[in-house]
Length: 67
Image (cartoon, rainbow, N blue to C red):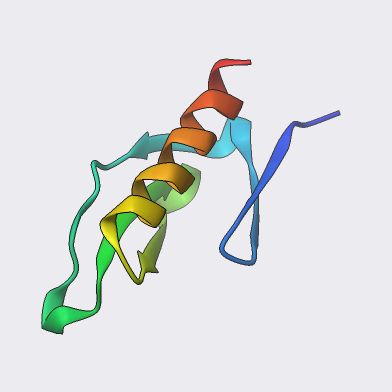
């Protein structure tokens, strides 16, 4: 069974993730953001109100990938 992880309302199948970007400032003062590149040229652009929340969510995703 595939491992999954929920982030910002999306359920992501972990073995479909190709790349995760670093946390960076989103355009137009929309807070902080990181992107998840999936197989098949799909990309999730996840925006959060602040850098701390974005960093926590990204770290939890990376931890789930390493387990």
